[in-house]
Image (tube, rainbow, N blue to C red; front, top):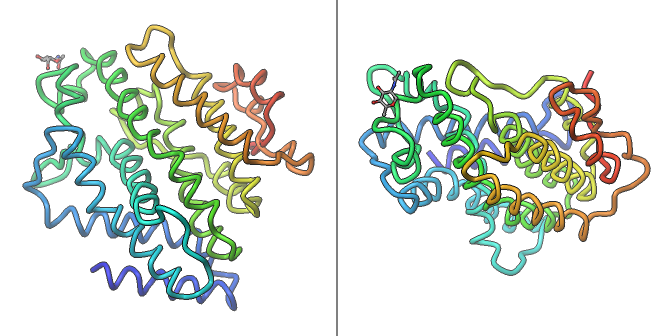
Length: 297
Ligand SMILES: *[C@@H]1O[C@H](CO)[C@@H](O)[C@H](O)[C@H]1NC(C)=O
């Protein structure tokens, strides 16, 4: 299976050179998600009890895709290796995997014939007796608090995610690796504190995705996008949430990394304008000191 996915990714990378009608940035995330579903089939009995189990599951399910992809990219000679590239590639694959696991709570729990449960008991057990209790309206507050803890956990991988894409020099490879990572932090920002995760499908707005596809050219754009999605997340943090301090500290670190490494160009100064999104109006202050803006139409 892995080999097949890698082959397809390589084909996709090839294709981008001569056929611009098939954007590789669209294909790679689809392939990674496809792989996740194929992998899941074989692991119906996998019990995710501890956070360590969860990390291990993500390591095998998607982390190895990240590692395999990194190996192929290095083998292609288009990119050079960098320190700790193995661990960093696995971590950035895990970032995508955790994001999908968070977003797909409802789809996974409603899976027929049998629920799929990837959220670790060590986390959800603090809030309810059974993972499916989050579906019920009586437990909405707990559901959202647990969701927020899951998002906070996923953010551990952001620094590795940034390091992995910052290492890339080939523009096509950079875009195909960076876009899924940016959409992942965008998805987390969207899911955070969002009860809709337990009620239906939570998707990034098409306009926002289109802007990312359209405008992401350089690592500075990526730092800018991560910075702005961090602002978006920050604006959503409720001070009474049990993990508020923890996530705020993580966001401070991420924003610092982005500011210290990225040059926020004037050119993209009007790139991400959260002021255009009512639910992120609070982010204006943040956006005016920051920079990127994906104005959402
Ligand atoms: C809420 O969760 C608790 C603990 O898991 C459970 O006993 C209860 O039945 C749930 N409430 C509803 C309305 O589902």
